[in-house]
Amino acid sequence: MLNLRIRGEEVSKQSGEDWTLYHGDCVRVVSALEDESIGLSVFSPPFSNLYIYSDYLEDMGNCATHEEFFAHFSYLIEQLYRVTKLGRLCAVHCNDQTRQKGIEGVCGLYDFPGEIIRQFEAKGWTFHSRVTIWKDPVIEMQRTKNIGLLHKQIKKDSCASRMGRPDYILAFRKNSLNEANYPDPVTHTAEDFPVEQWQQWASPVWMNIRQTHVLQYRDAKDDEDERHICPLQLDVIERCIGLWSNPGDVVLSPFAGIGSEGYMALKMKRQFIGAELKDSYFEVATRNMETAIGERLQGLLPL
Image (tube, rainbow, N blue to C red; front, side, top):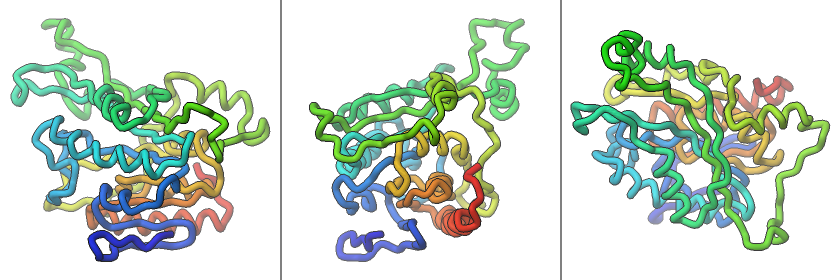
């Protein structure tokens, strides 16, 4: 993996067999990667100004408005396009965001996925596919206590009632006008990707994602600035990597967090590059990369 230098200074990193984690701002890290070197990017970005993860100015979660977040995020989208191989994908995990009456004057939803699509298209990406990931509305109600999900609201005024919010995977492709120009397609065989598996994964709604099947994260919590941590489910990552990359490809996560995407990439015999700004996340992600390599050497399955 590369030794990156930004403004003349080498970026702090940890690395091992098939993986490198850079400890720094994702925009600067991705800007220093080589053109068309990434086989797949998969990540969950900060959900605009919903949560604050750290007090770093470079942290995209430190924004006052959605407009401010996307002004920052657009620089990363542009660099992701440059480093992605022609014909390959970027998979973004997201969901609709709630609008709060105390802040915005009304209760409702903000179309966060829609704005992500518009921003990616503006930087040359083609909106390729959307997967809806079913979420249990009872669990959301218990966690958020949102009045729109409470049963008592049905009796009071059901026009204020709403459905639970699913998650989404938005897939974007770096296209060419001539598909013959795609030098490195992702291919499968009927043996490694049976038709029954494809019929399940081709569904626009993934109903069987295990919501609690995530890497352990308690060691990454930071009392001073931690307000939220919710690792992406390993089932989701496994499907994205298995469907949209080849063994040996470099998988990128610009928001590596505690290393969920890297953990699955390494277990599935890919290489991994990640960037993480927050100290405690970076330390846990490093341990998770080492764990993944150890489990891979033991022949343990990804899930």
